[in-house]
Length: 452
Image (cartoon, rainbow, N blue to C red; front, side):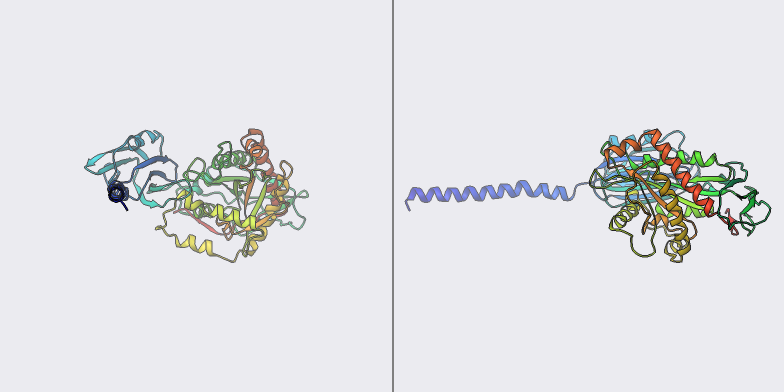
């Protein structure tokens, strides 16, 4: 090799060595900075409700925080470490509505270098829960501030004050022939702690060839999803949580117009309710029926039709039913549940396997409702399906889950947002409920309702 060639080769080696060093000096500090980067605030959201108000702070990476409460006036203080006071955090105060039942004022400010302090002024004494959620779905890390009123609203008292009623004749199976006097059992006074709702007698009697339901039938409607959990999202941008609430409110109005029925909603606005709490609300008011309303979604946009599901003690009736149950049961992960809060009574309820009779009644209710829905929309499957839906696990309440249509289907998404279709769906569900009650009139309740 010539002397000049050797010099060129040596120079090339020096260039490669220098370039490698430069690359290291350029990339390594950036990588280190990325590793130590402080979390940035991505979004802030406020979800007011009578049950509780939730404030969610979404951020790019785990953050350190501390919180404490202050009396006179009532305040919740949260310190966020390693974050900057940005316009996103400063916008929190504007997101609190004047009619928020729990929060009076919310502000963010720089407390000291590297620490942003949130101060939440409260309208009443509360029991706060502050916890983190790991990234899931379209969400990053989330810090959740839940403020529960120390004296929560009592759903049973609200229900008792909701309407007057009169017994109404309905078509019934001929075997119901009890000859008793009407007994509403609804003389509960709000100031009393415990009151008997009804004597242990049949709740129907036969008059002029028709059965009469002599007490109010209590129905809990459960609009699926809500708040942090949007449910399925249609191609046109429709959120399942809005559709289910709209249908549930229409159905509530129709049930309230019936002389022998009363109704409660697990949520009446856009906020998240954990699956177990939905079951608990229905049991709290001693519901006779539980109807959960949803709008299905699938990866293929041509999937269409309505469906009705009930709980299964064993396996799912189909792979599609199993998939749907898994998807619906994931609502707690998306909506955000504080796993540190344990309710042993509810845990026993959800693990109760002695539900054979209740599931049998659920199947009858589901069949009646599915038949009525089939009159206004194509059925995705002509029979009631079964799977392990957590929201259907009340051991003593016939429960069904209705998939009103596929929100992932562009044509059905339009129908789900149409007032006329929503009204037809609500009317069909009520028709199915009435048919079930005509053939399976409820017995009078013998349990005590505790109002404490």
